[in-house]
Length: 262
Image 1 (tube, helix red, strand yellow):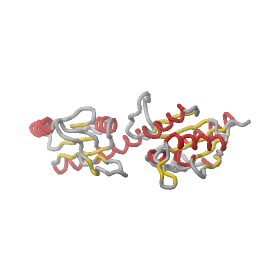
Image 2: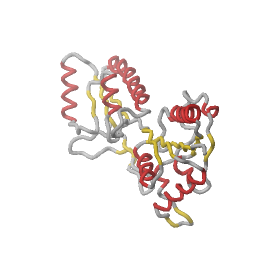
Image 3: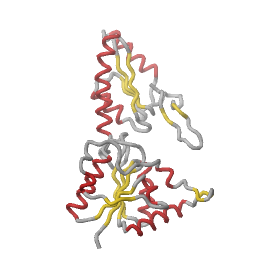
């Protein structure tokens, strides 16, 4: 019987999702003679009336420059937080329903494209005997045992380009310019773009900062004849003795959103 793999994307958007889907389909079908079933809307596509489609090389032609994901994505937490007839479902029953549907579809293994949350769910499938291949996706580059996550380089390019543009404005108007970038727990984007873009101060979540020390650095540059400064700060950077800055603290239905530290 022809081996069949399922592929899905979960969590937030990131550059490169469609490129990975294309690579999986072309490699599996053309080099190994396998069938590939695309699962739509993340893990949710494995529940209830499943949402899937067969993927052939012709279906992924021209995907390299296309953003987003042709399979769609959903918030990974919604998969386990499900209700039926107004009653919250037991988590184990949710996993078993998905695994049963995989067997009905003839899927022998899953290729999962996602970040921390999505791959945490994938690990639960692995514990239940499902063959899993996890593909790390996060622009924050914050997955252990992974040298480089896809999406990070594009984020880095954009942040560095923004810094290049800020330099001329800051110098022309004698300003201190602050660029806030993503990075809840990991400061890879801030660190790499800051170095590449010639920032004078880089603030990352891993090292709590002192506003007085930042001010001293700016004053020192001013005294040395530099009439402008560039500061890059990750959204999760935290001042010593202060709490994290949130754009939206969320509620029971929405997770808190960092932002505003800049």
